[in-house]
Length: 213
Image (tube, rainbow, N blue to C red; front, side, top):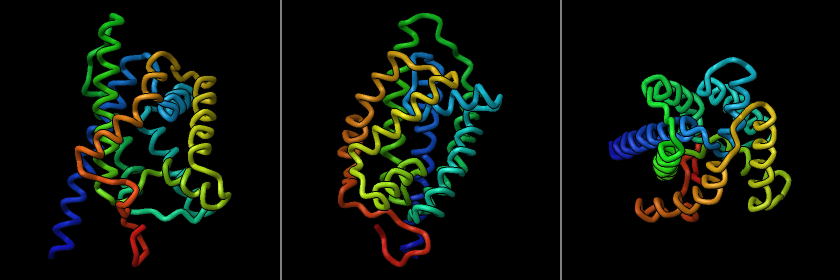
């Protein structure tokens, strides 16, 4: 019963985190000043494919997850699967419900900053649930383990690649991109401290494994 209670609490935290994350993504997208690297990639693909931002998030997440599990033998948790299936839907829901479109640069900057604060809090919160990393983080970890490449070089290399591709596909790169790239890591770390969560020592629950890692 205690384990079920803990899992229920973790799932609540996970979904609240997804909610904040998705809301923040929509606000930064609506600010139209540039998004983070993956956001630019998703935006560009959505433009080219003629489907919603959220659906691109889901489809790409499924492809990345399948690649990571099949070829890189990446360990996943229930949170990894839910991340792929749920976040894109919530993003599209907020995109539909929020009708405000900023018309001045001040409104755009304010919307960007609010979105950044909300998005990074959501990211920190869902990670703190310890039910598995997102598929994109799992991809980086999998490549790190298979090819023995340092994450501090691998992560920016992958993000730079998807940013460039996203830009040429039609994604928006701008002032907001710079702000998000250089501040999101610090904000997430700050939220970790507030949540009393240490990512270096915390264990993520994995599916099909008797141990946590």
